[in-house]
Length: 345
Image 1 (cartoon, rainbow, N blue to C red):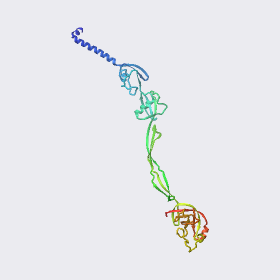
Image 2: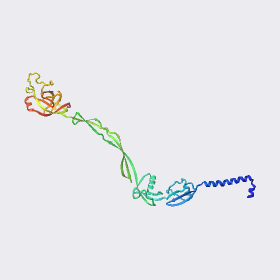
Image 3: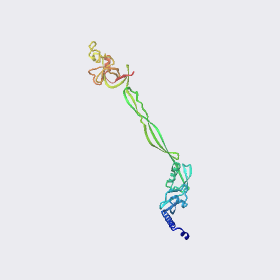
Image 4: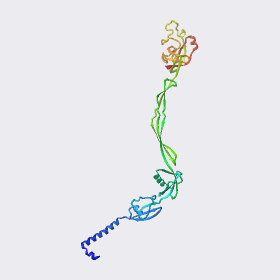
């Protein structure tokens, strides 16, 4: 071999030597660049320590022949890079029995540590909320073949449109007969929209809660006129009353005993309004009742305010009778006087 090397030209031997030396140092440098990390792997509570130059968690597990089931729970992703003093925790999946709504049973393999985490897994897998319904709590530890009783939880929102009654505003009208009504503005019902959240546990209604109540349509109040005018029936027809007055009544006639005039005297039998003095023509204080006003007098009947008198002041009325004897018989009485308005019949 040495003879062969000597046979190679000197310059070529030097070049080969330099290449060999460079290759050795490059390999050493690359070896020095690969870090060695301390990793603790804990499987179901059993801990083992590893010194590794692997790059990812998956490579470490594969190199150490630590196999994973699809349901095992590991606290790192397999492509996570390894750090020094890393703790990789693996919980081997165990089978538990899930009893749903006291009827459906299923076997569920899980690597989760607590019941609460299993419920999270169930919800993710089924798209359904579950609630524990026995003595277990969400922090209870998972054990092989344990039974977990759960109830399905579902919610439903219903929207109901409810009519809103309108108010009725009554306006009195003294020009309408008493007991008569007239609608001025038609009432219109409003509407409110009520949203209700219903929660079902195990398929049965558990609770109801109103989550919104919005008035979507304002009601329009109805306006009704109510007649307050009394209707008086007389021998001249039926009239609305516009006013009621309590008065002291007396009686008079055309005789001289009442007027101081005799037949043939000027103005005999003629009232202050120019009307002929006769039954139904009464004397009033024109400051209380204007002349010409139609009246209905309790116990007397239909009348017209057509005369005045010196003694007729304030709430007094003097009623005409055809004879003096009738006046004497009538005497003095307290009466109700109705001031008549529109004739309705």
